[in-house]
Length: 250
Image (cartoon, rainbow, N blue to C red; front, top):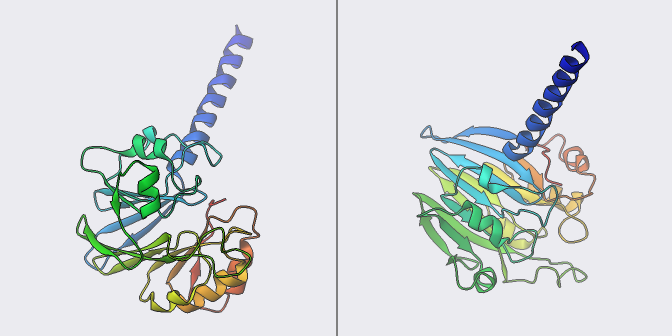
């Protein structure tokens, strides 16, 4: 009887532990911010290039992906989206299944032109330079592309989007897949920046450091970094006013 009870206890402990671990991934890591008007902005790491944010009582998702990037994410276990931002059409950024799981009545889906074509015309199309109001926020589509001659086939100029969100003066830059392009000189007054460091497709740690020194965000999340030695970004930015926060964006 004692053996049976002990076995049940062990199994229960393992089940609870597994559930916590699974839920930990689903919930992700969270960083808390507050706008000047007092609106809470909570940022959750999901994985790779996938981010979710709770802005007041609204939920925003960036490039949600289910099984194209491991581990698999089941978005049916997460809050439905008020806004979804898609930067470009690569499978690790555009996933119709994830969009379907997150969509509710009234969900605003913002996409670049090519992503809309792949989704059969769905989404509110934004091109580089476009701006629109969404849920009382300002959303601007900014360039995201490869500038190195040997990388331009990955993300050609003019096709993909980065996004700048302005929430009551609290400004968030989501770079998408890009290198340290000249247009970053125009991205100013950024509170939080997400910059990619996924070799060989986006930036090296040195390029991320250069981009951060150009943009000067208060907080930097290096994201979409794959197997890159991401701690090098923090080392390269030591002595600056940039708060580098490493989260699980592999």
